[in-house]
Amino acid sequence: MILILEPGHTRENIDTIVREIENLGFKADISTGANRSVIGVIGDVSQVATEHFEPLDGVERVIRASRPYKLVSREYQPETTRVQVGDFEFGGDKVGVIAGPCTVESREQMIETARRVKDAGAVAIRGGAFKPRTSPYSFRGLGEEGLKILAEARDETGLGVVTEVMTPEDVPLVEKYADVLQVGARNIQNYHLLEAVGRASKPVLLKRGLSSSAEELLLCAEYIVKEGNKKVMLCERGVRTFETYARNTLTLSIVPFLKEETHLPVIVDPSHGTGERPLVSPMCYASVAAGADGLLVEVHYDPSHALVDGHESLTCEMFAQAMRTIRRVAEAVGRGA
Ligand code: PEP
Ligand code: MN
Image (cartoon, rainbow, N blue to C red; front, side, top):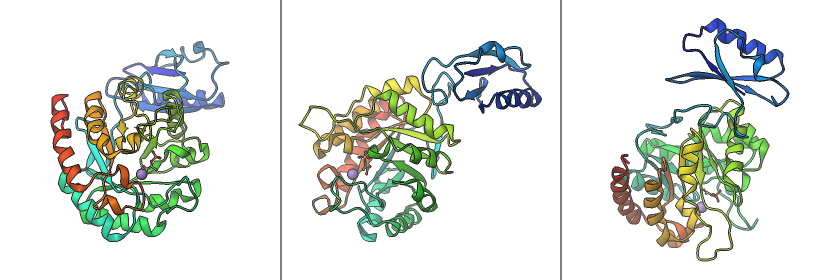
């Protein structure tokens, strides 16, 4: 349920409304926008009438959320959420590109790749220290050592660090080094993890699951935002289908759909979304044309020797080339990059 406040409401009005919401056993979420302020009533409100809140001073009108998700909907917050990562703000006028290797393999590999992607125009770096792998015998990342290397790469380049966290217990550790906590596709249904990153102070990049619908993705984001962390970015990274020419099927029509439905910034990951190097750059351009706020691209300084996902990683030269076209496409659709 969403309480839209009168333009002239006072602090006392808000306090009284929040008290009333809490007395009924719900949580209140206050959102102050440029054009209007709202209070979300969080919980199962199916048994509460809108008339309950309508007479309260400061309340202009009360609406029932027309979607199963509330806090992440545009209905609730018309302005796009801005997520600050280092010096860059996702969700603003410009398209931001996050780039780096799939996995942190060594200090030299991460720092050299970070320098090169920065020179090409990336606004944040990525690399996994904790890797969810299909086989338990594959390389699963360097753990804390990898996080330290990522922090060093940030010190070298000044760019924010995006890296995956796999368990609720690891959130404090990853948060110590990372600027953005990534929840991977395989973990999107780990609701305890969603709640744990929802209580963290760092922004979250939430990847669509291998078979998540758009609605499920939005409900997973709701789990995070409901815990208080409003800095969430959604990431399309393809889904499993019958198709075999690519590792996953990248569904770019989800981008304009999400831009309509939610105020959260939308990122596209064409690397995991296709799994095939020749398809990555064209899908970067298409994603920007479709309205993405950002891209996540795997780049390795020597993909043929990458320990993970070399097949889909761009070389540093290919990435620099792709960035030039990404900028042109971004300008063509009224944004910079
Ligand atoms: C990744 O970004 O490194 C990754 C493992 O991606 P996904 O969770 O989308 O498979
Ligand atoms: Mn990868």
